[in-house]
Amino acid sequence: MKIGFTFFTLSMSLISWSQQIYGSLSSGFLLNSSKDQAPSYIVNTIHQISLPWFWRPENYAFQNSVHTDLNFGHQLTEQIGYELSFSYLKPNSVSENLSYGQKIMSGDFFQSAAKLMLTVPLKRIDLYTKIGLNAVNGKMTYQQTIEDGNFNSLGTATASLTYTYTSPISFGFNGAIGVNIPISKKFSFFSEVRYIHQDFTPKNGQMTGFIYNGTDLIANNDFPTYYALIEFGKESEWQNYNSGDNSKPQKLYEHSYALGGLDFSAGLRYVLWSK
Image (tube, rainbow, N blue to C red):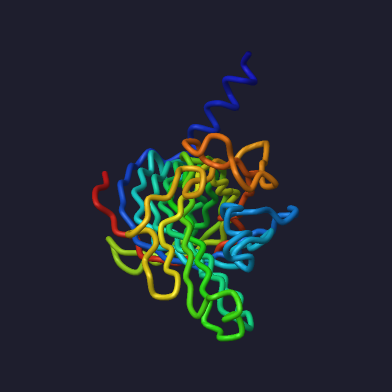
């Protein structure tokens, strides 16, 4: 009992109880993780009949991303604190140029995170580590275009098909090590290396653009739900080119996309309050 009390007393004596609240802005570059998955169908299979080049298994993956962050932190002591972050995450588009056109996958996401931060104050710099949980929400877009006269035998001079994919909020985790360098009483510069685990697994897909030979088919046609919407899950009916119930979305296997990976970021911190 005495040993435990002595250890607790010594530990408390090493902690400085000064408090600080800060805000910071940062940006960074993320190398997206890779995922080992089989290719999957991500557009309605009705297009196998009318536009076969719009319908095939795909296995695209984001390679890298950029982000901008707004952070608020509370240092309970010089060593212990927590941080809340709100980020706009923009994966760089993935494109494939084909002899008859182009395929482009892009996305826009908003990410929030709550982190525990442990700091080691040194004479001129502070070293720190963070660990926490993150959540993401947003959308992914997949666009295919055709501009090639070689397909005139099928009656197609130009065509563009766009799908948008969404999912409920998904969760992940993150960890970081970094250095904070004071440059005045209020301002400091920081840089950190993070690892983020975060996947985006669309649950729904919707045809949001379909232009065929200059005609906007979305505006001029009322597509049945089965041909305009997709429901991703554990089953697929991709071989059923026509459904007996066109009022329900077509079912296709779900596919995940990595939004996390190894991240490098830097920014400026400003002390809002301290005592």
